[in-house]
Length: 122
Image 1 (cartoon, rainbow, N blue to C red):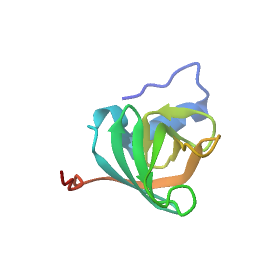
Image 2: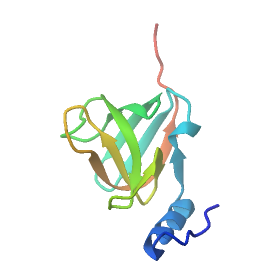
Image 3: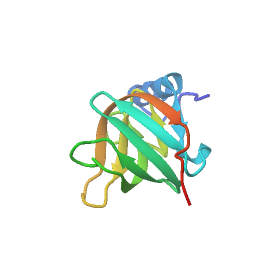
């Protein structure tokens, strides 16, 4: 549980507490090959976690209509403060795409679901 920090502004402390209430997942708590469905206000993304913050992500018609290898930085509240390696409801997912110099920031995350593992045929 988070306790307010005197060096943070009231708004930052409120955002952190709100993220604890809304919930989410820390990437390091999930095993590689975990599949997440991330519903944002405008799109539904599928992320296959590969470990070390990397994932195959798809679900945006322009940036990732097909799975693309990205580095997930974490989530923001719409500003520059990043909650590292965390995907949180009420926040914006931020990831690095190999074809763009600036990070991709999604619309507000509405829901996060862990999906059954993909059937992989050898």
